[in-house]
Amino acid sequence: MNDLSVVVDKLVSYARKNLMLARENEICARNAVLDALGSPEYAYTGAECRDSSPEQLLQEFTSVCEREGIFSEDEAEEYTDKVMGALTASPQNIRRAFMWRERENSKSATDWFYTYCVKNDYVKKSKLDKNPRFEQGGLIITINKAKPEFRDPKKAVSGNSVKGGYPKCAICRENEGCPVRNKRTLRTVDLTLDGEKWFWQYSPYGYFHQHGIAVNCEHTPMHVDKSTFVKLMDFVDKFPHYFIGCNAPLPRIGGSVLAHDHFQGGGEILPMHKAGAFKVMGRADFGGTVEIVDWPGTVIRVVSRNRQQIAEMCEQIRSAWVGYTNTVLGIIAEDEQGVHNAVSPTVVKTARGYEMSLILRSNITSAQYPDGVFHAHPEFHSIKKESIGLIEAQGLFILPGRLEGQLKNLEEIIARNEQLPAEYEPFRLVFEEAKAICANEGVDPSAAMKKELGSVCARILENTAVFKDKMTTVKFMQNMGFELI
Image 1 (cartoon, one colour):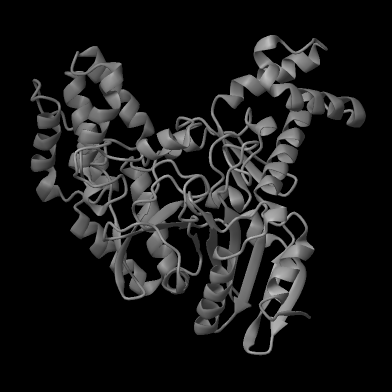
Image 2 (spheres, one colour; image 1 turned 180 degrees about the vertical axis):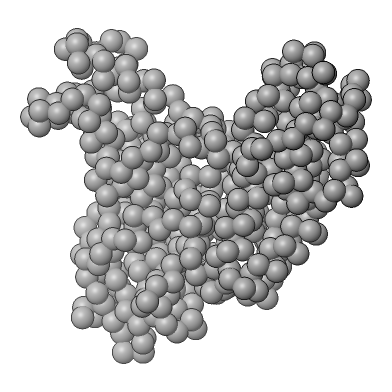
């Protein structure tokens, strides 16, 4: 029996059981798979697949095809995408199935859609599950083995662009089913946010549970204004089981795709949203409350059941911050390099109503801190040099995959009580502090390193804080007429 024929029939069987492939479409789908493989010799075997996830089946598929010389190991990802794209339901059928479920329950709809994106191999869940992840000091820390590290902000931007003009960028809806960047399996569903057409898709390499992005159907630059706050609330009205937020629309402190307006969200409440209030404030004309969040970064949480009041108050705070200058604190609103202040809004819906947190950000640089005054400082670059965006500002740190091996080596050096080798000199601070934790607390090097990572990440968040003293944040709000409650 031809191994290739067997695995092709298993793929079609898998699609029928997991990807909504109708029996009437099996022949057509099988022929599309064979076409993607260059029309190799094939004979029907009737082989069935009992898997409910694609990992093992795709491993068998790539192994057979590499053995048969159909493609090389380096080409496996592209051919896997071609084949699964041929077996994935059409965008129309996906959206119909989603809408049918959404009429009953929005959570069941998103659960179904996410599961489908795992089953068709767009969301690489099997790879994501292998990423080390732990909680330490009130933060969540994960080591991302699935994606490369971008230490240069310019390379980070170019890494998410698409040359040639179509699609215009990596998140345009025109990527749906597109061979560029292997997005043949990408599927999206419709959103209407503040009267505009948007869409929702899941991230193939998500950082948290059901991590997805909401994207403007129009290729328009990222921005934050009153309409942004309305859109974010529209989203959590539609999906109250999700949070949603927006990166600051400036280089170094925002997302790498600044050319296209989009939000990030999903089904996990991140640590910042769980943080308590340092101080609570109010104003006579505002029916809700404003909280100075007890958090290493500078965060103002606006709480109310009234959507209109939330949008108006958030816009007032945003406007005040964008125009704020305090040279003593190193904050400059605008200079010859452009605007430097922006907010990252993020919202959850709770029993208290809407909780819209505004993270105050500044991308100003200096001779001492050319990568950013309010960025991770150089002593921490061995751990994290990439931009601190929306997700990390909320307490979920995505550290580069190289650290898995590097930190393990450091732990072994500590365990052997050896000196730090020259090639690990950039890790001097981490090494010495982890070593001290072992000595002072009587824990093993692995536990000490986790504690040290939690400490480093908390200090990086403190680096990003525009107001190092929370009473300065209180004064900022007092200047807007708010009083302590």
